[in-house]
Image 1 (cartoon, rainbow, N blue to C red):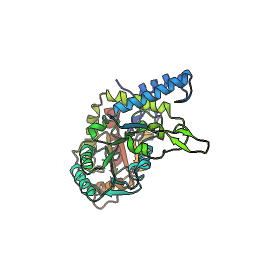
Image 2: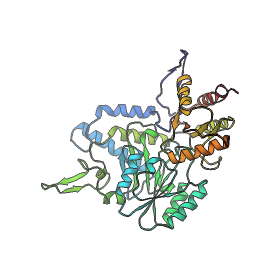
Image 3: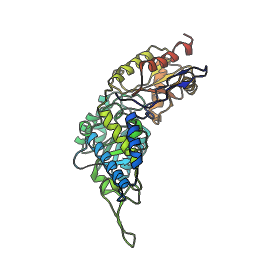
Image 4: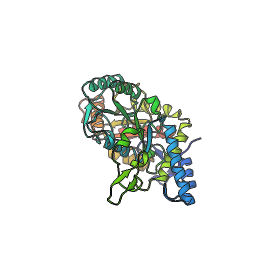
Length: 403
């Protein structure tokens, strides 16, 4: 059974103790126990990667490249694809923005996480779709209006609502118009397999700290031609195949071209270990917990779930909501201090989308109400229990609103 590292107990103000209800997994997931074990096993052998002939360097290089191969297979890469280690999803998407051929138009939706909204030099931003079908149709129409090299950049699962996007259908539209598609898989990867072939993706980006491997590594995987044709993301040792006496530089092709400096060996091994373990894990209980949380929120008269699509749209373990009558920051502090419940408060690095959904949610509760300035997000994962969900719902109900 897959499990995570967590504190045994958390002290409460009344002197009692309880287990911590970590409902902030979407921000930074805890560490899998098997990931911690893999890191501990490797640390005595930690050494230079791709540099040195000693036992430590040889073992470290082998582990680093085996981690790359694991991710290549786990992500469904094929001939002509590369796996480049990065710091996180944001870094991976900025790397992709760096290697775009000159004149490339990037088409995104205006509801993306900032990591997939801000790096692009010449973006065409599509308005907010209210259904998966509308997303596909509006992308089709947008691509009719552009020419030249085109990259479509979309999320697989919203970090605000948890809703799954129709990536396969969007990829089919993109390819029909001769465009490539990059998928921000940061929030999909902890909950479901990320297979480039099944998604129809040309590129995928994800973060280790979202998949229970919080050691500072991410990955960009996908077609190697743009990566090999572009100048290095970082200039320095490791990216260079040779430097002449007059400082003319010959750069490596392949992943090394964009992995200058000493690589994050521990992060790469942790990420590969987590992905391999998650591929065989039974995560079916999550759907029940999400349904339980959403049903409980629906019964609360001053709480409204944020959503973009129909209420029945499939989703991962993320539920964000608006609360009327309470300051969201104060409420989140109270949840943590008095009830050992960790949630996230804010706009979740998707400010345009979250503000829009807060206005809509407040309007459904009370058309005359001023929308709160921030949402609260409960995100579930490995280690979440029914008791954690019920504890949150209990705090959100009568004790807060006098019912």
